[in-house]
Length: 323
Ligand SMILES: NC(=O)c1ccc[n+]([C@@H]2O[C@H](COP(=O)([O-])OP(=O)(O)OC[C@H]3O[C@@H](n4cnc5c(N)ncnc54)[C@H](OP(=O)(O)O)[C@@H]3O)[C@@H](O)[C@H]2O)c1
Image (cartoon, rainbow, N blue to C red; front, side):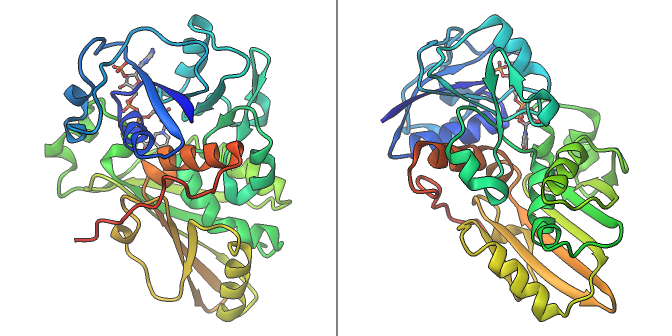
């Protein structure tokens, strides 16, 4: 049994991690650190956990904890680690973007391994700390990696991806207000979203160097990412399906669907479903995930399982909520 601390546990990814950790057979939740809810019961922020745990938020950490998950805003993990230090043996899993790029992956003598199991499972098994991928970055990379590895991308890639409102975190902003978001859709950060850097980094690792045009959208629903990418492809649809099935054969959470896919089939699970469609010389790749689970907290647990030498899907056999 490994002891767990969560920092930023009153936020969205922190809340999902608490739910996953309390149901994981090999993890024991010891503390949940909060800057704003110290001493309040965890159910104050996450009322759905009533009856699942009897723990209050704390303003102190245990520096000897086995595993700590940092669920803070982008750029805040470094700030936090400058104030609070953990034992060398503590495994740090960062859900933010502070350590995802190779140029940023060393900090305070620790090395952070990019935690996308479908890209580098064997490297993650030997990691000491993890930088967990971004949510859009996860959906998009899972959609592109088989083509990239096969050197099958020969022209720019165009991507549209829509995220639910939980993708923006718990803080209220004008574009996350119910009155604005409900019955609405809009794009943001056209062609410049920050996740492009980690996507390019992974595709470079697979020796694929094509330009990407990425349009992120805000959807009028709470969770999930629906991503479509298209690019030219010389093979047949059957060859594309075989390529993807072969690439994901040893990856239990990523499945290739022959039938068209819709978002709710992965919501509340750690799965990514992929569908392929060929139109003339263009391959359309659709990939869908739950942004808070495969896009964040579920993937953090998947990485923990790999790093600890446990079954990859331990504590992650979740059920979709499709109705
Ligand atoms: N939301 C997603 O779908 C998603 C997906 C993948 C990755 N991520 C990444 O995961 C990280 C967390 O995202 P989130 O959506 O969970 O954010 P969030 O809902 O805004 O929660 C972040 C929490 O961090 C705590 N916090 C804020 N400033 C802090 C500070 N200076 N020191 C310590 N704690 C602080 C706050 O909790 P207290 O008030 O309790 O301290 C806050 O609720 C972000 O970097 C995000 O980019 C998010």
